[in-house]
Image (tube, rainbow, N blue to C red):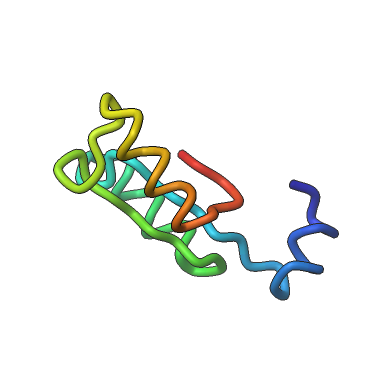
Length: 68
């Protein structure tokens, strides 16, 4: 998504879904990105990415701009 598109959507804030949030990378990204964005960080226990149906439900409900 371009910067212009993000600004049009909500003042430059992106909705970001972070998977694996309890790991080191997920924790660091969540902390860093939440300063200027709406971040939803889910652990493997909260969202196991090997369960496609659950992932699709979560993504459709949250409608994130970015998934990490």
